[in-house]
Length: 308
Image (cartoon, rainbow, N blue to C red):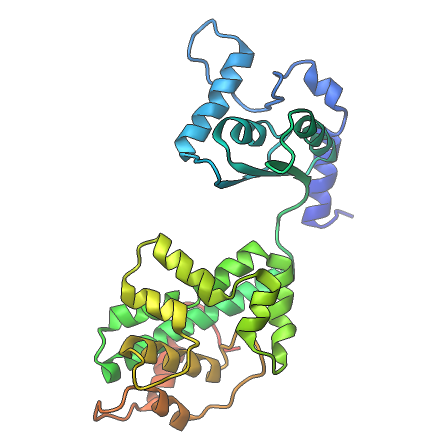
């Protein structure tokens, strides 16, 4: 019988690469690079061509001291080691070959790069539980965006802007999930079902909650102040000073959770009165919640999403 994808790939990699590092050293350059070289001169040497290749990659990446570089499928760690040595980054390489990782780890130690460069024997492909949680997060964001679009008129906010705020409001959570796939997926699936403060629990696990992470991303990507406020403060308590855009997203997020698209915790019952209380007062209109739910569900189905 054929094994699972991860098992099958691990066997194939071991068969190909774990024959011995000494064997590959017979014909590879000192950096042990198993990819094409970059010859600047027709009669150039392999060693120089491989160094020129990894340096060109580092320049194209515009690496700066103190940045972190992830090298997936790093082989014997040549690029990671070069980037740490010559560009001052913290390099993290991963390979499916145990022999490659052992060779790279020994070289990192010889070069005095411990703490600045790491090469792991690891399969970075994500577990099924991660895929389920990521799907849940994205469906919540999509549902929130569609609810923002549906409720935008009641907040005197343009629909495209409302939709954008809804789809981006939880980018910090997606980022934490990508950074800590195993731990954070389990955290969302199990830990948040209790009564503990969700943001405080996130800070204990990841040293930052998803609102703080999202705020940092929003600033890095030069989002507007309006979008940045939504991303950083959509869990804040509603007051008379709460901006209309944030009120819209908080109402839409609640509607998404009550519609079955919750990220964590128990399911919430549908309560139109609760939704109306979250919307800005004074619009003169009561949202037709039942009709809006049908429209949102229809749009979700059009994008091949089904209610949980």
